[in-house]
Amino acid sequence: MGVKKPLFALLLLASVAFAEEKVSPAFFKLLKESQALQRHNAHSKALPKLRTLLEKAETPFEKALARSYLAFSLASLGRHQEAIATARKALQNPLLTSRSLRRELLRLLMVSSLALERFGEALSFGHRFEQAGGALDTEALQWLSYAAYKLKRYREALGLVKRAVGKRQNPPASWFDLLLAIAVEGKLYGEALPILQRRLEENPKGIKLWKQLAALYLEMGREHEALAALVAAYQMGELSREDLLQIVTLYAHLHIPEKAARLVRRWREAGKLDSKTLDLEYRLWLAAREWEEAARTLAKLGGNPLEVAKLYLEAGAWAEARRWAERARPKPERTLLLAIAAYHLGDRSRARELLNRIESPSLKGIQRYWLRCLEVDRPCL
Image (spheres, one colour):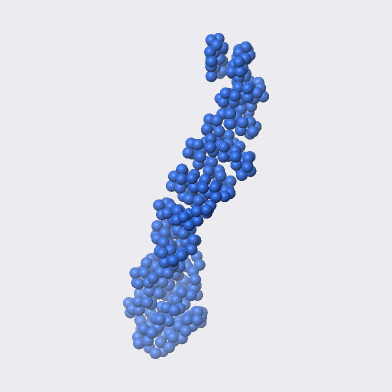
């Protein structure tokens, strides 16, 4: 995680004056020289002076003050581990009473901890910084929200981003995207939904937003609303193959397989879905108990003619059932299907002839049923 360097120079300028009466003239002179270098971001030049300052410090107060300024330069040079250790020692000295300086040391500890990805410590120092009267700006709030997010403290991360949003009159859209991402990953759906609905109010034609809303509803188990959101996205413009198949899947889950099958066919014929979706369409027709449509689709798939014939029989399409049964390999089941088709097409003698040919033990029961139908001349299914 990257952390910007020039954080502390202006605050350091305000911190020197209070110390003049509490330190030796020699110490104060060297401190001012070091601060002048810090003010111009010449921290690499300030560093040896500040180390010398620490060595020459004669009192505990002077040591604490030297460590404070040394910590600022170390942090500005990206030497965060040393900066943290130095700042901690400075804060441990009760003689360092300047509230502004103590606040900025806490801020330094927060930022350096973030730079080292010590996220728990960063959040703790940020909290202490505010308790000491410091005000976190929007950038710091976003840093800390990232820390909370990395620790999977999603509600805390969300609260920090909300505070950043509240500090801006016109916050960028990316901040709301961040709010949404944190809420969804943290399964804080009650927080995510109003954020997304607000975004849609601002941009009702945003296809991506409608798709995000659909995904959110799916996470919440609200499939009807998810389907409505995806359909709205579809009406706004082109969707990907995966999105179209998601619409189909939702129709199927909501027990509307016929609608799902018709969409698959329409989108495939329009070139939006490929021929691989034929099998999906076939299964959807079966789920919808649309036997004739299922038979046609299975035929396109190059399915077993006998299976196609069975589907046409279920649909009551007797002529088609016979035509497809005739294409099948000779076997007792084929003979039975031809007999049933002949019966329904009014050719009873042909039906009887075919039934009498069947010698399969497994088909004896159904064979007797159809022969009895022929004897009593009653309609059979």
